[in-house]
Image (cartoon, rainbow, N blue to C red; front, side):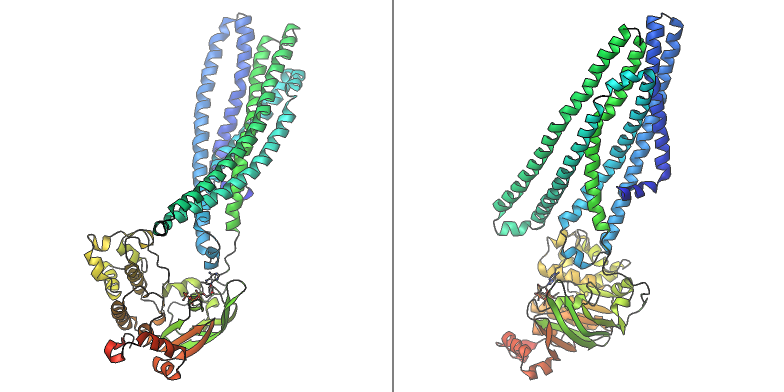
Length: 582
Ligand SMILES: Nc1ncnc2c1ncn2[C@@H]1O[C@H](COP(=O)(O)OP(=O)(O)OP(=O)(O)O)[C@@H](O)[C@H]1O
């Protein structure tokens, strides 16, 4: 919460003005019981009618000013908390953007959504309501008890007898409810994740007829959630009644002892009326203590979770003396590169060099490390040992923005935003004209099917491209990469869903278009890699074969076996293995 306070202090005026309004409102409130004392003793009992109107006017004036001050306080505190919510969300979002792939490997979307949504809202509520009311009540408590001591310290002491017990109970309550909130919040993440994954994977669920299982899974989480809420109710039921009893008992004591003092003429009736007015100012904060500590405990738990993410130092970031490169040439070299995600080394002693404008094709068994290898070029992960060089510079020394903004990647797992096709392609180049978008889609062999849609380029595609076929999604993703005109282009299994003919046309377009771009193509079909300047064949994290198509055929190794497997029924002439990349 201390760190949340730093956000609050950014807006000093928004703290000072409503705080002054709050203090003035409290000061005015303190006059009310005093006026009640005078009106009772002097007007009702003493019969001095001349005071009636002045006191009534004073009541009206106090109420009017109090209303304005109250409104000011509420309004400005609400603006403050809204500003803080925006700031925290922004910082959290910015920070999440700065985190590397490895962070997202271990974090699920549902959990992150809870942090940005629910947790920030909890903090926001606490600032707008909890902390303010807590401070306000403390001021009421201190001021009212001071005045009460002045009126009659003995009666005050007797009336306050239950307060230490109330305070103790409130603290115990805070402790128990704080733990319970932590559990509820963690469970909320599980529920969020289950709901989010179910919706995202709804087609899979239906295809496997697993709706019942999903419903049961959600039901069980929902029941757990219910149990946790019941646990909270039990805590409230345990602590609130004794707190209520003790606060009400203070009034009983006041009436009994105060009444006795009035009978003994040690206290006037007016003083007793004023006394009970001030006592309410003590009792109310005490009754609220449990509720407020509860609210603050909840937001404390949320603030801790937010800060835990904010405290993650991005493992991949610009070094202090990072090199600015406005124009990459595209020479890439891997020197003794080793890489691992956790314990298992997934890339072992990778060495190769590629000159600007050349094409490298990477083939290999599944899980052999192809994607991991290309992910090191844009520094989505850092090497464990060795180094990747671009134009002679270790990628770790190149300014990250310069590096990534001059690369284009089509990932294996296609992702499209819930926007129009045009906007999805323009994501690759913010200021691209419509003509450029069309051209990129044409090169990616996507223009024909896009033209057939009723809304053509304005067609809105759903999240993850729902509404399009796998091959259509891949082609739009390729257009998004091509529009960047990048110096390094990476296609990670990006044509796997295309038929051979479309793949052939697309790669042909690519070979014409890419001109100076160094291109990495991960593919499984010989037809897609045949014309590369260099083909790397990987197994178990190592490059086990390398060379051109002809050289690899001559070697009669793994590549040759795959060639035979894929083309056993055709001769080159018959099928015409595409000359796409020549
Ligand atoms: N984010 C990750 N965290 C941990 N391990 C990973 C991660 N990504 C991949 N791996 C592991 O690293 C190894 C290499 O994976 P990689 O995706 O690079 O292989 P690949 O050759 O591209 O496979 P495929 O052809 O199936 O796409 C595999 O054993 C895989 O399980």
